Image (cartoon, rainbow, N blue to C red; front, side, top):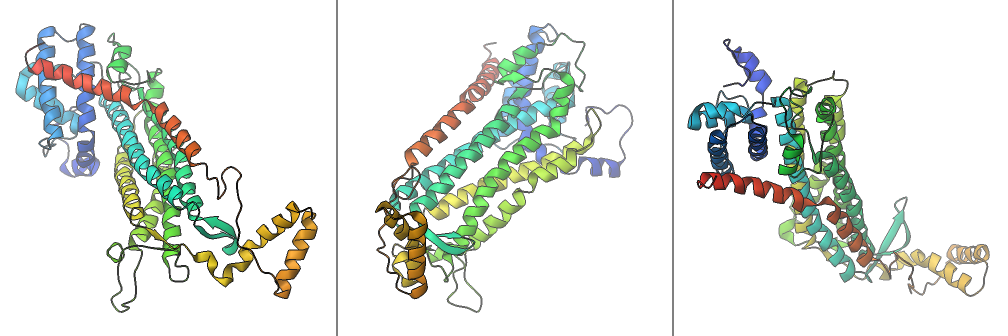
Length: 453
């Protein structure tokens, strides 16, 4: 069944090609689609387009469908084009003509727009929750190993002393910027396009403010043409935020691969978290981190995929946009899997605590020697030349004493301040507003099912 179908059946080959994986992707939008219909039908009732005697049965059956989605009993039947068609079909089967009235004042265009925004804001909230777990662990590890020294590198050459505290903490702070990107994406997602219909509004007296409030959006997309233009742009902004997280994870994975190798040997993992070789019995391969690095590198190409799909499309809806779901939805699942696996691995990491005791790292303390001479009154250039001559002559003998105290340094990584920044950013999302609104919609529909409305 197709909402647009009249008296002519679509060619089977055309139908298969154009629908593609849309049913599979639309299952992920089912919950959002029902929430949108719960809000839309209440608005239709308020403006006089849906009778009181129809509202109760519609809300009751929408609640039943919502519960079927939650328990995994909902499916898009073969021959049904999309989730919107499936929900309307179920309503019509169960309550008759009243089910046919829910589409008044909207198009599949604004219906999928609102579904996407409800879905994406929920996924952003879930990604942020995942990040929060990884962030907390990185901060914990940073504090635990704040005094454990390791080499710092420039140009992949041994440069200056660093610490595992700084290493873990750096990725924690990197995640704060990633969450800022997600906040911007959330702000774009959390605007209501419902009521824009096919992109040019409706002659019905729709109350768009009511659906905005019922669905917990921060505001509406005011201009109906721009509401439709937001398709593709919204996905691109979300993709950019996701790719920022992926960039951080890819770099973390790359460090782990490097530091786990025998030539470095800075860290280790239990044997069961690594893999072996079919012919080399000594191997402990960092496959988890390598796969993560590869997946996250692919995710960094996500904004380009979205951009190429949506670029230079003429004004109004174009079917190309359907493919955005096939690109974006699996990417979100992949990123969440990588965040969870990074946290799982790091909970089992061991660090080597005597790395800089090796003689080959003597020169890593040369800057400390120069700075100590400067503190004693020697001009910097003279101190630099003196230490350089000692290194060339082989007479340099470092003290290995580290005394870094400024903000963000080995002795003062500022983890409390970084945690405060993260907390401040997360508090700006206002996830509770959307969550409470969705809960209220479901409860209202449930009360209709119980016969109270």
